[in-house]
Image 1 (cartoon, rainbow, N blue to C red):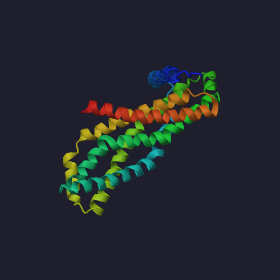
Image 2 (image 1 turned 60 degrees about the horizontal axis):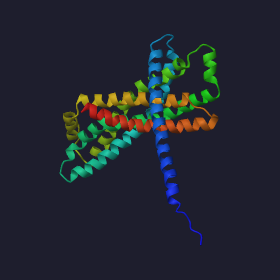
Image 3 (image 1 turned 30 degrees about the vertical axis):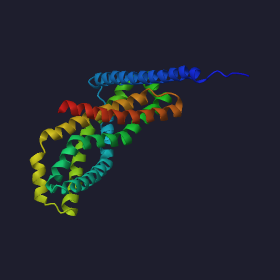
Length: 271
């Protein structure tokens, strides 16, 4: 009678080895990406203060990142304010505190939602385009052509995009605040019957300039992080069209995660 050796002890070391190897590879990739983004950020700001200053490229990116995102950010802000006012009014009605709908929406938008949602919209619309465009230029050797012509690609390609993210996301955050409050006002006053004077006076009573500043600072940090990550992934893409697509996917995931992680860190530091 033939005896069979149990196979589980033989598979267990292999499974453990693969798990450790996968975790180590993932950790190395994360650390490598963080280091690469930090190094690229230093290069970008070093070249940003050195002539020649390519203002045409900068204004083109400001238009693409900021002006091009006005509609989607404004629409998102309007419906976010409307939905949040509707839900908070339902909760506050249980305690006869409908007068707090205005300040609650205002504080939530200015401190958190406006900066986060604006950065996410810019990531999906402008960040993906940045990564794809730079990745295509890399794999088609257009970046190498710039170096051949003695044009620094970091200064020519990356500086305008990173500065556009840094400057325009806070501006879009203010747009989100405005449209969000307008949407919440329409729902609270027009649909739910809350007094306009109560809505405005309570909002003015509880909303402080520091709340708006917090959102603007977060918007600037998020815009900088998103632009750096997308530029880093696109600038270092390889492997043809498939590599560009993979780099864009990685940039979107990394940008979204960085927004939420930085939001938590900045929230702790601010308070």
